[in-house]
Image 1 (cartoon, one colour):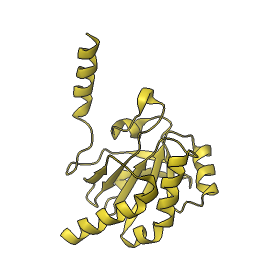
Image 2 (spheres, one colour):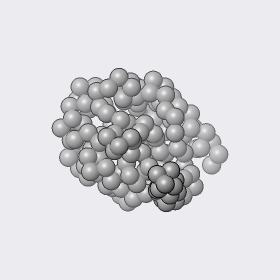
Image 3 (cartoon, one colour):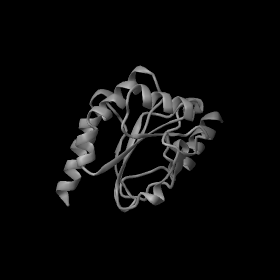
Amino acid sequence: MMNMILASALLSSAGGLPEVGRPAPAFEGPATDGTTVKLSELKGTWVVLCFYPKSFTPGCTAEACALRDGFTELQKAGVRIYGVSLDGMETQKKFKAEYRLPFELLSDSNKAMSKAYGTLGMMGLYADRKTFIIDPEGEIAHIFDMVNPKTHDKDVLEVMNRMKAKG
């Protein structure tokens, strides 16, 4: 009986998860610069939305620092990067400041973004490490289900260059 309930829950939630070529789920979230970031206001730009489990942990720090170190090249590729975790705003601000991150971090403490993007981790305690590239029309262009924190900047840049070369 429990397996049937679990299977039913998975099937019913799977229909709304982001897929390449489909519109990205709308979101809005508070950013470390005091603004509210809304997907609807980012039309016309490439958006890289990086969900990560928890600020100040080794993997998340490595990922954030890789994106920081590759930021100039990613910016040249025309992307806007946002890091997203369930951490509260004060933690996000401290994380950004301590590692001098040049991109905004969003606090998803209400878990709305993580639910919409299917990244809510086990028991809702953290966001799974996943990255979504959203094209200027607001569609999912690429999903990184497996993220290598140490090379994420290079991996994102490679995918962006490949997509832009296609037209």
